[in-house]
Image (cartoon, rainbow, N blue to C red; front, side):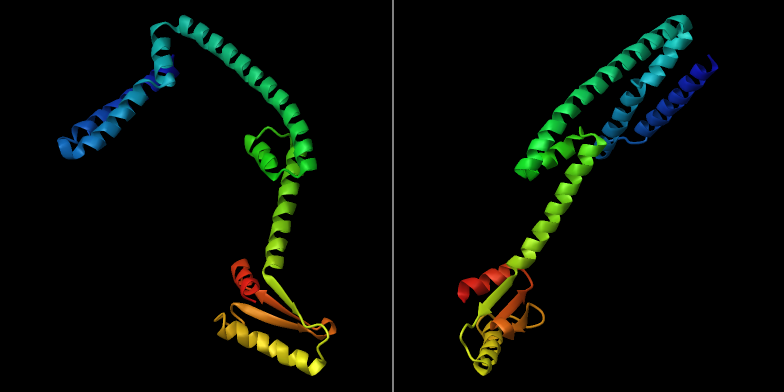
Length: 209
């Protein structure tokens, strides 16, 4: 009983404070602020804890019975939710197996976001997505590398050609060496590798070469 009285008193004090705040906001200039305070007042009046405490003070026995019924219904709802989650989790495990076999990243992400995978399945999904991110990163690095091979060119001519590649990149493509590209000369294969700052630069070089 005492707890219910304290709850009602606390809510009524809060309501009074909100009403006073509302009165301190007169005129059209404060219309939006008044509206926001009004919403807080309605929310406070409709708070289940406040309403329950009021009912308890009016009829303790009836409210106790009501709370017991509510608790039972709540437990039943939670039990049903758990069963639904378990059913969906079993279905999701099957879907995840298929998605992993098909390397369907979108389906795997969707299952992770749905939050229905058990700990083992979630670990497998996250590991796959992490590995995929690494693969994509490596692919981006590969896409940003160009190779020019000068087969059959003698050693001196090859080094002259590698210098010419650098000059073309700086003049024709107006790229800054050391900033937008770096050259690596591999005499064993008569190759010049260009490591670009990004895929766009590499694509521009391949297209214009």
